[in-house]
Structures are given as structure tokens and as C-alpha cells.
Image (tube, rainbow, N blue to C red; front, side, top):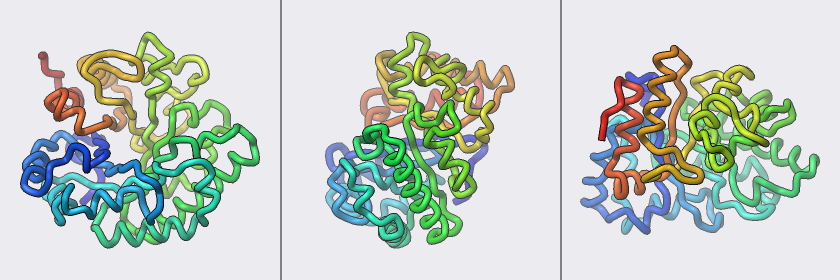
Length: 301
């Protein structure tokens, strides 16, 4: 499994709550054949974090996926990263030594042949009360986990996702501090724009050109200007049937991507959550439109 493909950009799907939508065994194999528009899958499961990872229960449960699930993705050229940290609540991260947490995740990744670890920095445990000392401890913990995983999993991808507001614009913003310390160990960042789009009537501008309000300085062009490498940025947007709060309609997103390509602006990765929504509600149109927009003209319909 090597980084990138002929598109030169990542197209990610988030696979969440496997037991609620993923049929067992043969049906799962059949559904996996529809994922050709994606280069990467992030396997996420929101359960109490009482084990080494959030996704362990889902990935090893024979009633939700076949035992060779990772191999099935690999056979289609799709990289699979395990999502860790998304199930944390309250101050749990402070009660887990960073080295112990990372070591448990690394052991599971080795056992199940994942291609990397994706650290999902969302929810109550990551928002906190805004105290500077608390935020410093979050950054220290995250940097330590990142470095430990990087050392324990040579050659595998270590990535992170954060809400757009944590990318800037000040030098003390969380991701800028993380990037200064362990940016060389992070393969890519998923910038979640759900809340930023919710605050703007011009969704594509809010994501690509100029973030509104408290998201000023966090649009893709602004992050590129701030020095983030294009290959390390992935736009995170919910999959949706139509425009609405927190969403960009698939056709509008494809047109924005084509406009950027024609203007010779740097392409960045795209992440749509969730794959189940794309397949069941949109019939795969989000993923195919994204791929078309990167490869050529977006399709109509």
C-alpha cells in the first residue's frame, strides 16, 4: 500500500457504527466492491473507550465483518486506518498515559494489518473549558501519542482530525502547535468544516477561500498561505442529499473542485462521512462526483 494514487490526492470515507448498517460476511464483501472511488477508509466506532481502541469491537466481531475485512479493502487498493480517541469522554485522555494508550493502539493495528492510525480529536474530551493550562496538556498528550505511534509503527500512516477552528489563525491554535512539534510524523490532517459551513451561506467559500467569524484563517487557501503543505490537508464534510447546515451538496462541491483545478490551485484531499450515507442515500454519487471532479469534468444528474 503506497500513499496516493493516479489522482494525486486522497479521497477518504469514514466507516462508522458497523453493527448498525453493515451486513455480515458475504453481503459485506459485496458492498465493499462499490468503494472504488475511495483511496482510504477510516474505521470508526463510537463506543465507551474501555479497550485499547474505539474500533476493536466492531472490527473483530464476526457478526459485522468477515475475519479478512482488511484484506478485502487491500485487494481494491484501499488503505484502512483505525480511528482511535473518538470515544473519549470528559477528561479520560488525562487519565490515560499517552505511551500506554499509543502502545495498545499499535498492538491492535499490527494484529489486524491496518495501514495506519487516525487520531480523532473531537467531543467533550477535546473541547474543555478553554483554560490555557488544560489546552497545553491536551497538546502535550496528543504530541506524545503521535510520536509514540510513529516510532512503534514504522512505515504506517499517522493522521489526525480536528475541527477547523483549531487550525488557527493564531500561532497558539492547537493544530499549529501540534504541527510545529510533530508535523513531520503526521501524514495528513482532516479539517472538519461542519460547524464552519453552518455559520456561512456561502459554503464553498467558507471551506476553500475565507472562513467566516471565529473560523477566519481556517479555509483551505488560508491554511496553505499559513504554510500547511497541500498534501497534508484533507477537507472533511458530511455526506448529504442536499444543501443544509453543515453540508455542501455534492454537485456544488464537484464544481468548486473543478474551478480550483482550472485556476491551478493546489488540490487537497477530501473526506466524506459516512460511507453508509453515500451508498444508501446517495447511491455513491458523492464519491463518484468527487472522483470525477479530480479526474475531469463532473457528471450531470
